[in-house]
Image (cartoon, rainbow, N blue to C red; front, side, top):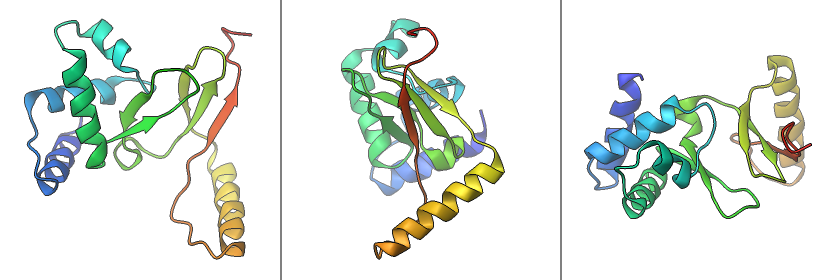
Length: 144
């Protein structure tokens, strides 16, 4: 885990009049090590000493200050990951059956074409595009 991520998290929390507590640092570490967005129950399965209310409350604070991002699917559990500017630009494959979310990166040529197309669409509607997120909805291999 890069020290820079922790420095950025501490700076963003301080700007929001929040402290970078041990639990928040631990949550950042958990999300940084995960290879996909994770649910609170998943975090609690792996770290049984944590309380659900503390994890939920601290993830909400981290999201407010731009350290984490929430990925909402059709099921009852939101998934959490580091904010895109900390984790790198990526997209999601979301299973409509089980709710699993997987991070995917697309080839640079496809990303460029997508940026160009989306920018044109935004301009057509008088909108200034700054960045994009793409969630692909379907059925994962395990659920097929």
